[in-house]
Amino acid sequence: MRIEDLLMANVDVDFVVRLERKNDSHTISNKTFDFSKNTIHQLIQDGYQETREQMKGVVEKIKREVSISSSSVPPR
Image (cartoon, rainbow, N blue to C red; front, side, top):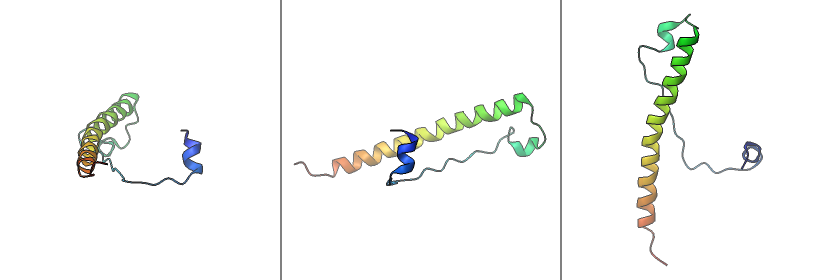
């Protein structure tokens, strides 16, 4: 499936995940005018790492929900 397919089709959304950036010493608010290559690179890397950590929790939650719902379905 391509992005164009998703844009042209009606898609049912079963759930929404909100990923939020944690506040730390590298946040942009502490470096309002620091657009150095190192700062931008560090912010990007931190974002990737935080997303991976948060998505692990999301995937585990989905697995639990699927497991619960599939175990509650009576056999055919």
